[in-house]
Image 1 (cartoon, rainbow, N blue to C red):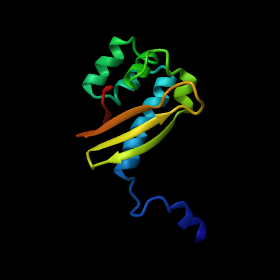
Image 2 (image 1 turned 90 degrees about the vertical axis):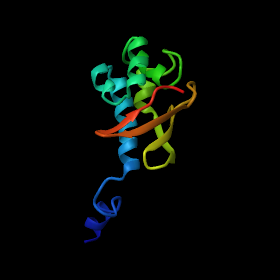
Image 3 (image 1 turned 30 degrees about the vertical axis):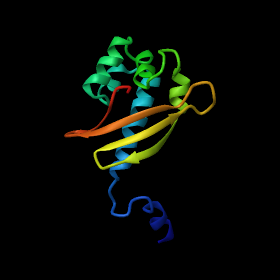
Image 4 (image 1 turned 45 degrees about the vertical axis):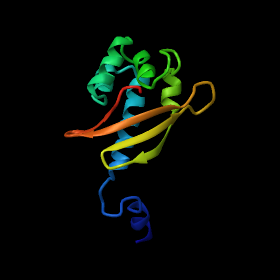
Length: 125
């Protein structure tokens, strides 16, 4: 019984929280960017962020631009190793800080907004 309760400990009602789903959107964005999968990246972005990504040349260069940095700032290895921390949540918008695992690249601030089919990352502010 202790093993079962420990395994289920993260979900009070057996559902994933909106905060976790929003975080998953950011983590998916980072993973798909690191892999250079532009089509998958676009699925995580709102229309203005999609335009930013495409104008910057797609993944992975455009991913760095979506994060509000120069195209070379976030390398594939930095995107893979990034750490995501929730800083604010109001029910329809979640704000995160994305930090590189090691120094060199400044942390990025990312806003994720709930839409009819899930969560989408907003473009750089």
